[in-house]
Length: 523
Image 1 (cartoon, rainbow, N blue to C red):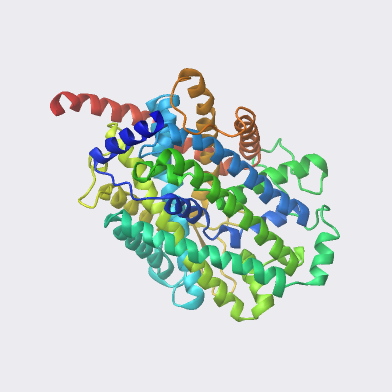
Image 2: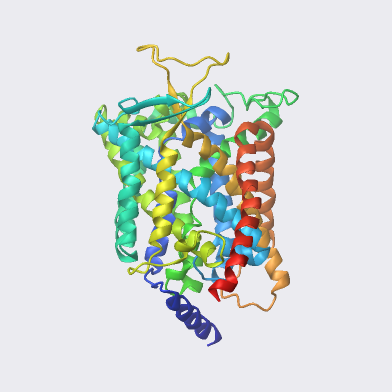
């Protein structure tokens, strides 16, 4: 009875703010799964295979990623059931530690984690649409690259334009209310889940290759043709998966970057807690069901790759498109087009979930006086439209910068066919920073579970974390080890992530001072 009364009180409180509880268990699970499945599962296994060098270790990387993701989701379920409010992880960090830690998460989410991911997924959408429409190309310039420095430039290609238009389209759709946003999420998540299942079945049944199976599963654990892991510090030795247990351990930890990023964004459902029906029950359940489903599909997809392709073909897949190479074996040249359609559907649905959820965090921050005040208001459709538009603008801007590709001597890399300078995308660097930053806040949030058990022992907990305290403690230890390895061996792409987090400290104190100065006027 007490739980029912509490749930009703929470719903009334949120409705007073204007949110509508329109997300059921199926909708919530679709947000979890849909936000996780993007383009990563179709691509990153190539890089992981080059780092760990064997079929067994490739599968184990994905298994450990799945284990870590599910462990974290089970822990988050308790926090979500305790505090079913819009803002999710921002609220948990604020309540467990202080408003500063909540703000640092929200700040990093806005600058890099959410918007950088939205930008990357949008360009991924455009990249695979370009397979079907060749005029959508990273070098078909509307505005040719303008070099800003020795390392950076800005440009607008047809590929970048399509990515920006996708972000704008999905943002506008989500400003029209939760009902339309969740409809798109449910349709596209169902479609891409079925597409991934089809890929798995085709690989396991139609693509069944006895020679590949014998080569891969007959030599499951011996690394070969590996990429050395070169540290950014001169005093730290270069290692590889073939250089003994230590080298294999380092390669395994570094390989987690790709798989963890591919499995990330599962926590986005917590951002929308103010719009979930019976959140104390449905959020923990959706986290468990959604992450369990996606991780199972990811593992089976990698088994399908290994049944169809020898490991060397996975390591050297053109443009790292392992799934395309798999379908190429089955359908020939038509495989690239079929896979492009599947990834277009996948990235469209993924970005819808990311865009829908992210603005709810900025809303919660603004309600605390720690973000632009306009983002703390809902429009007539009961959604934070200003937050959605602000997120849209920043994510679109992240599509425009380019990195100037350099060789080992520091000279510009030229296209051998045209002699024109080659450019990368800034968002690729941002995503390297994302994984390190995300792990910092996952560790802090799960540590907050221990803090709240101690500081609020009598708080209502409709759901308690499975395996507490062992499961959350294991996650903290494992994620911390991965972060330490990345800090030592991938310093250039981890310290900027830490720097982005720390830039939020002075901004927090400025915003807090501004909020205090305005408080008497508002009163």
